[in-house]
Length: 76
Length: 177
Image (cartoon, rainbow over all chains, first blue to last red; front, side):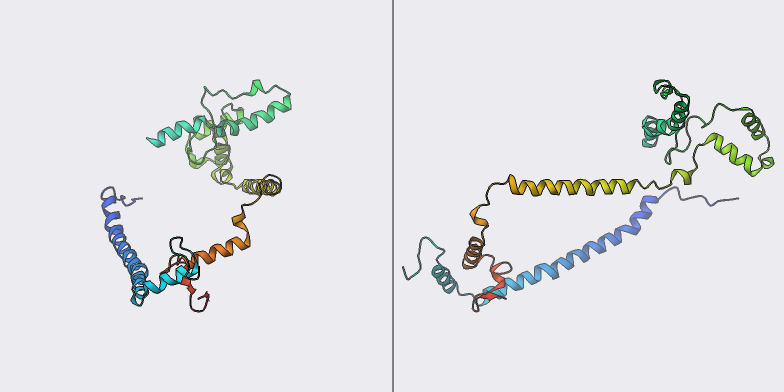
């Protein structure tokens, strides 16, 4: 019986030619996924928050809540 | 290279002498001999049943009676003349257990899992006893009232107001979003 001779060389090259494009593609997908599912929403959230942010008003609310030690609520 | 070390290491494991020891021990106990006289001589070639090192250093039965010797003689001739039973007998002379027999599941896992659960249970009892008799009183920060005031203070401080904690609180309505 004549069996076909198995591949003796180029095994790593064959594996790389198959797996490297997949690895690159998956990495790009992972990066794109992270960008559009994490960083973009985060940037939007920050932009939304600061669009109509009134620092003085927030400060006064915090002051009235009594969390500061240097400036007590206006009642005291 | 690792294969060679593993093959040599295979001889040193407890399994090969155990596999050969069991039949020897049972014969010895039926004769009433002591344990010491049936100790395995590790300086001589051993037999083992191992899936990963298939060819032991010696055949399983090396003291052959007459019919076994005759069989071995017949084995030296053309194998086509051996009957099926003879071929199996020759195999059994060289090997104690076949691969399917070696691969038989033992049900050992049930003992292991059962033992794990038993000890987890005992540990649980110990933990319960400990939490009642050993632990000091809880800090005052653990009480409901303190935790509620802690939450309120975090909201007052606007902890993580953009994406985190305070972002989920509706300050106009005074409730969670």
